[in-house]
Amino acid sequence: MKISKRQREVLQIIVSVGSDSWGDVWTHYYEARSDDGGLEFRNFNRVTDALLRKELVTEDPLTLTDAGRAALEAT
Image 1: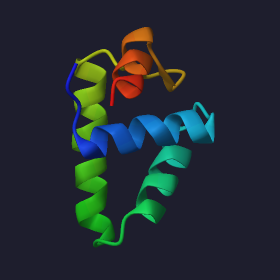
Image 2: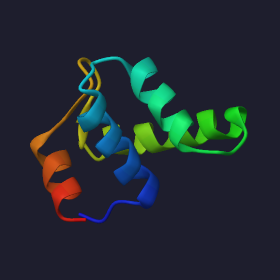
Image 3: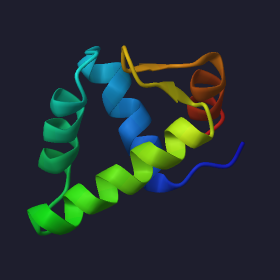
């Protein structure tokens, strides 16, 4: 499955943070970007919504699915 650069970033952050908190992942994502915070927040929401729709992550707790792990490993 093809994933975008930003989707890959979020998946990698979920793995590295190892947290079930969207807030922790957002904080790490924001720190990895240098753009305006408001724009990045909208981008983050778009990316995470797409990951949920593709069933690459679960929402509660925030973890990668098997498909999410496979997509990350394939990039």
